[in-house]
Length: 238
Image (cartoon, rainbow, N blue to C red; front, side, top):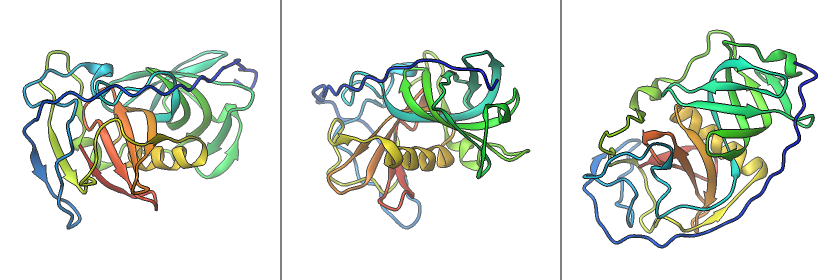
């Protein structure tokens, strides 16, 4: 695997799509003593149908690849990368390059550290179900998705989208607001969100006006938005 190289280009464009006016019903579960506040609109409609990898991308859609990542089990391997299957059953194609960095736990490693069956965290530039890997972190042997995985609702075609909020959601949050971030900031927010809610694919991280981050999650029925504070701790989800 040490010879696996791929040329990748990263194109980041930002497009904000206007928010539709419908309201939706919310089943609230409060954690950590915080109360969940209703957001100003959501792509998850209590009467809607989940749209798979497109769900959650309606009124908060931005065009082009952006910083994100995923976590799951390594499957097929090739000279240019490998596949990862998340705990929610989503299959992700990971492309590697000469600049891709590797960690085995917290120790620096090489591409040889990645093997079929390993649990990995992949951070990089997400374009739908493809990630151009900037960093691949091999998790310790026996590592599995956290218990929070049971709270993630996998995508099932034709299933109604889950609409609920947990924890603390910024009271003035509206889909489509904020600024897309990249680099170390995006990586830290992505890792925090994936640790709390493994199973999906993070396709962007947005910094909000209160300096918290909205981590946008696709490939699952719920959650589509995970909120991370300035200390990179997950504080809420919807």
